[in-house]
Image (tube, rainbow over the protein chains, first blue to last red):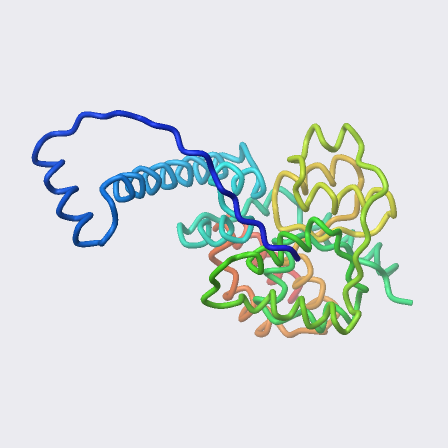
Length: 112
Length: 171
């Protein structure tokens, strides 16, 4: 399997912050040994990630999307999204298939 | 000759989680479309990996032992792409099941619904457990222990249905 790394283009956004927040960002970035831009970007990306995951879990819970679509919505891999569902105690929508149908399918496939 | 079963990612993860892959191989030849394999092995593309999930290790071993065969569908119908998300493993798994009339094991609601509506053989990890109990391949106790391992992925309603089904079969 080939390794793929995505390099995204960056856009410029200007924002105003309270002086107290700006000072805190400066201090935290310094402590973390990153630039202020990098620190602000990580905060925004973290929040966007959480928002997308929350939204995907909600949609999955309401049976509006399936695992693959949820993974895409949350910008995660199939496995990662499956793990997030488990971490958030969200059951898989497996009960749409009647047990009898599943059993009948197994018997038929094994010709029993 | 053994029957052939197509697996989807969610089912594979559960199958290994409950340590049932060898029993499964006694019943079926495992068939996996490339897209499902990509979903299973996706973590191999990570730059840094703290741990390799057990199901990935098992998959790689079985593939090396030629116990897993990759087969892709020749065609995917428009009807299917309209209902199942494009470029997902389950889309390819169901398309292959339709083409070959093989069973597809999926632990995911919406694709299962499509299978039932279109008369495609489909089943879940829990149905497999019930079947193994019916055939006396596993005991009730073993099944309960295995269900415990995946109970976080099962709704209370479904769990109750399974327990009632197992109880009913006990009589």
